[in-house]
Image 1 (cartoon, rainbow, N blue to C red):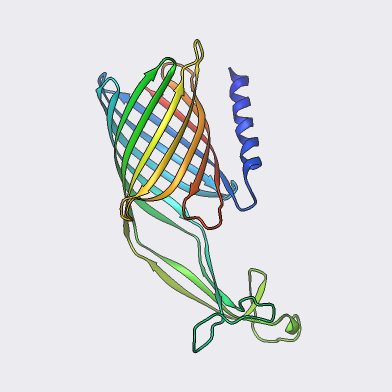
Image 2: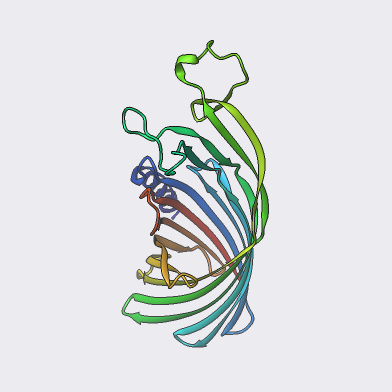
Length: 292
């Protein structure tokens, strides 16, 4: 059994970078959960979560959660929960180009390319979020297969933040470098600029409402502690005419170590519907659950 666990971990680690294109991101998401059954139909739980993204180089989330689940029928359950999230927003860069004073159209060089004027750079920062959720899950068994559909309403409150913003302007022509310009110079993204200023930008508090729909299929292998599964989830924005925000595919297996201890290992793929870069997010997901 230990060799099987090692094989699964190595397989996930090998497949994730192999599937990623140069613009893709990949990371490691971990979660530990404690679940207490108060009766045959009612249970409470609490959890801790840590995420590592940006090609395993940047801690991106710490979270603590609490929830409750009530099994109304054999194949139907209700759940509520709260999550406090402390996550990292990566640096955001916006290129600025020279424009015509009269028309406002971008000015072009001899090769027909927009002429760079500078960059606005919002520094990466940590922010807090408060999340509440309400969900209903239905299950149907067919032989050794278990099909489940979970519909989750998710409300998130983003706490406002004041962040630092850098502005770089007036790039120095390469012909003037390195000795043709003697004034102050500022380097960014491989370009040297004459002007650099530092200011602040206020990120206002905001609320987001989503519906997350997840379809999952599990397979019960006879006399085996492993239960493989595959799921696909759609995330729709309830504030934007039910617009599709992203899709998430998850393929993994749960290892029932003992009656109380369980380990979940999975590969997770995220894709935002409106991402113009066509980049994907590949994740190795590890979860531990203690039930008592």
